[in-house]
Image 1 (tube, rainbow, N blue to C red):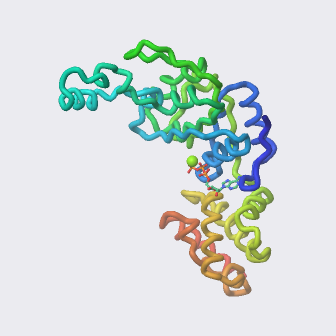
Image 2 (cartoon, rainbow, N blue to C red):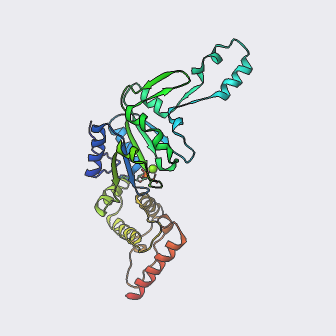
Length: 283
Ligand SMILES: Nc1ncnc2c1ncn2[C@@H]1O[C@H](COP(=O)(O)OP(=O)(O)OP(=O)(O)O)[C@@H](O)[C@H]1O
Ligand SMILES: [Mg+2]
């Protein structure tokens, strides 16, 4: 089982190596990188390439580790017992009220699956620690029914983080780590080609130049990412923006159209306008 990228996803050699290393070690792949650099999509693409179903667990600030294992639905049980009265078989068996979480589903799936734990840094600090044993040993205990759930097949686990919180050392020890570096111009070109195979080369060239100019603005608060470049290109194509609107011809340096796809706050827009203004005066 080897991952080589796909026709919808550009994987650099170091990323492919990391995926295959995690698979070999049978450890979760912890993926970090700027927002929009393809962390979530990586899990989808690897699952697809290896022909595995993907189970996804999107983490929020309120998510608890236990929810990934199972939850006991006491409220339904109480309601059923009141409605059904005595003697209802369903109410008697607590197993009918145990709701399986994503990890349980992954562990007991018929075939090997991929499991995505997306944005683990959104949860509270205890969350990763609470999952150590499950991730390591691939098993957990259900106290209500006194049963041990063990993984039939070890799932391929992807964990993504946007670095909002530090992860505990004990957790890190159990993962293989990969940082998706922001794509260089050549890799970005390949990514854009995947999404817009028919885009005119000169328009793309001009758009890419503007994009990297914006990213390299000194003091910019929010750098635009891959997904924002793709959004912007989509708009340029949809609105049929001519090449001239992007190129800084002689005295006609202007703020590029639809720049709201790239710049997401007013300070950055002002900064960019200043740069354009200065360029115009330096000519
Ligand atoms: N290497 C790539 N190949 C093809 N498309 C890519 C690549 N990287 C990013 N993209 C595009 O960028 C979009 C955003 O990717 P994704 O949602 O995976 O980012 P993310 O890193 O999970 O971001 P966030 O941290 O905000 O969740 C994808 O839908 C895809 O269109
Ligand atoms: Mg994501």
